[in-house]
Image (cartoon, rainbow, N blue to C red; front, side, top):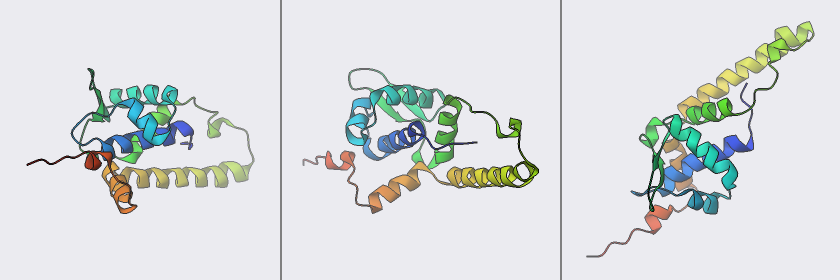
Length: 151
């Protein structure tokens, strides 16, 4: 069962930050920390797991950082959520808990249905969709702000 945690929110925010603010350059973790207020101890570990899972790509060097491994319309929020869920310590499985018949046959199946519906919705939601929401919300991309056209 997926549980909303700080690490989960931070991972989604970090991927969105990279997609929204990157432009053509890699995004450094310190920039994500500055913009999103995500503690670096959470961020670095999470970014590395996102690289290993194929959502992000790490770029080495003095101007290195992170960029999306694929187009933002091909990365779903569900993928990000699953990567972070795999990192978190598993709690007791609900099916292993003792309980009443109402719990086993009504409440737990309901919770499972809701979980499946939520994951289906997150799988249908792409990073591009989140970028569109950010743009519609009036959030200015630093990549756009830093564009300097000189003729």
